Length: 193
Length: 307
Image (cartoon, rainbow over all chains, first blue to last red; front, side, top):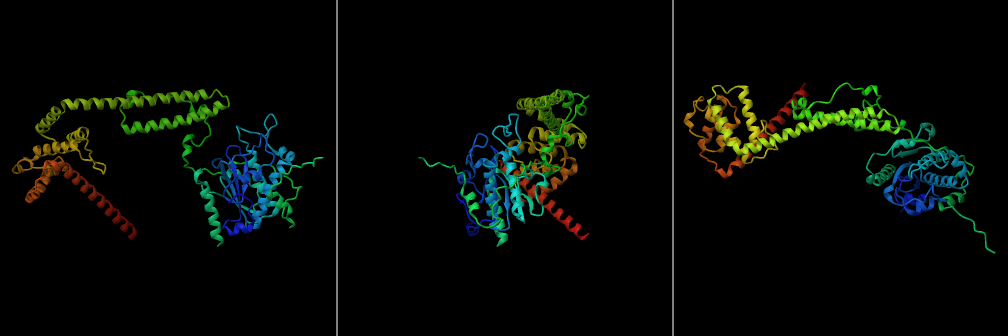
């Protein structure tokens, strides 16, 4: 289902909510965006630009991808717009704005992206920054963000409280994560109907 | 000769965003990137009763050396021998939790290369001494129980006979001392607890205990209660009736009244059915107690409502 780009009409027809899902890789800290509550190789292929030793081509193993957050918008068009925006910002960070992006990152003593083992926390932090930029840039009023742990949200000063409100996903085990995401989708669809 | 190849990293999502003609739909290429948002613990509230707080002393990250300055000493084996199993069990967990706290704090100091970790380690070792002594005491108790059991196998009958004689010869047995002795012998040798609960499974030892205590009480008090006319107790139902009454003259009198009623029915329970019958008596009694308890609780509820 999540194996190619889905337009707003398709999402509506197939009972999906106007949401964008952010998944984090618990091994490397990389983040992938998805329109549906699942990940496939398509997202990896679509969103990995110029992989290198610091930003490897991630694996599609589903046990190392955990939800980071779910951004819920008021209309399907806004959800598509935000999704495009997020992917484009990622592209910018890897391509023509890579120097600018690199300046903002925390570095280690050798001026590499800070890491511990395989983990680079900067990717998660950049994704949340990108989401806040998208919401402000497109003025996506009424956005709701469901976080998997409010820890990732950062300070309130990063978010425009007129446009966005924050919630926390119920705490369940890793195995039930995708079920929890499906439930959130169902809940929204039910409210809309 | 060759057409210059231009790397294309665009994907459908990026390209679709670019080809859309609607104004304000896609991001400006000159947009200023934002600084990565650092996660913060300010967003997280921890419940007061979160189980992991057990690893912290009064919610403190680490204690200072002064706070753990100790002047005490570990519990000695002699002191621990005087404690009940419940006390030792409680003390064990107090020690275990404290050691976990100390380990955590020691680790924190070790990570920053502080020598203070040694102080925490010293205290932890002292607590460890208490813990191995608790184990020592429990091992002693266990081995003495095993020894007593082995001894009882050899001389048990003789011991019970002696107890019986002493009990029968004693003039005044309606005292707390003798009640305790009966209770202890009943529990230690036959495994019959003072308060019955649903886990009780009647077996041969249990049955033997019921017979021993029941017959002992009857032999002691039948004459005083003026019921020598009953003769000997005929079957397990009669013995159990005496067993469950208190070890007093009134107790045995009550039991004898019940036996009179029972003898009218002229039923005699064969030896093969004894275990089943006693189990039935116990189950009935527990059920009765439970239903009484429920009734009482309901009555209380009604009273509270009316108030």
